[in-house]
Image (cartoon, rainbow, N blue to C red; front, top):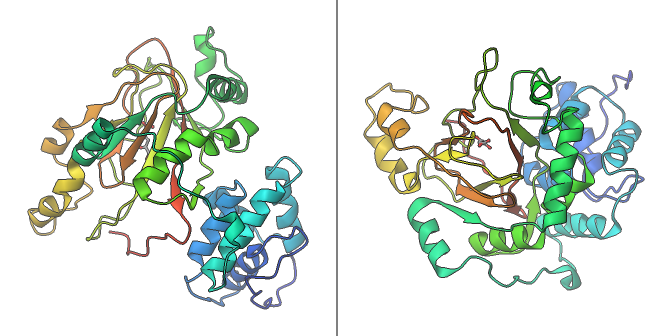
Length: 344
Ligand SMILES: O=C(O)CCC(=O)C(=O)O
């Protein structure tokens, strides 16, 4: 922990620290200054996202670590540790190139990522336009899927054939787990078919995958009721709603009643009118019965990825089977894309 209360200078984005990564020192110095009352504005947020997600670091865990007041050397050690002790030089090059481009410089044409071949067919795209979600089957190959499933069982210290081990886990009464940094989850974030699907929907391959968690939704039983998430939005619902995507990978076959991902198909087309029709003073996040009745659970096979438009109210659902639901959450977003709307 840094005991020094002197306000550090705001580092330049191109300050590479000892790991050779741009922007990390600036992020550290900005937050250190903020803790001492010196606010430097929010203009850096798109850079934060690329630097952190580019290195497989979650946004919240990173901010939590930095807000604990560690010095920069400790932050660099933490970054290295989260990456298994070594950084992939290609990743570092790509992160630095994106930071250069985002701060007005010229990127290296050799690092430009061409659009991959499309993986979503005409029917899927028509369904996407109508419903605001799409299911990509075989999103990862079987060894990649199986490795994440195994990593999750191991992280939970649980086993498929020991139902008693599915409950009482140390992350509490939640379907979110703490499993983020594992080579198997990282492989999913880099899976070519997943990237191709997001590239197709975004219209660019200049994308970054979020470092998000794995999830475990066990069957309900006395003492363990489904804790949510119930239908909600993760984004501001200030209008106009920009384009945005979220995703979930089923690690095992998932029936509709097995705690499946649930959403209100087509709501991306209705959001504006629905908000306009709300009685004055109504809280739009208190979803009404009509919306709840329109929510549909989306079953899928192991290896299916569901991508949804972030304007859809969505959530998980109670698991009424005898098998748990195992998933990995992730989304991919373009370089420089950052939602600056106020939270509504
Ligand atoms: O786990 C699920 O099915 C829903 C996930 C969710 O609500 C979210 O990612 O915001």
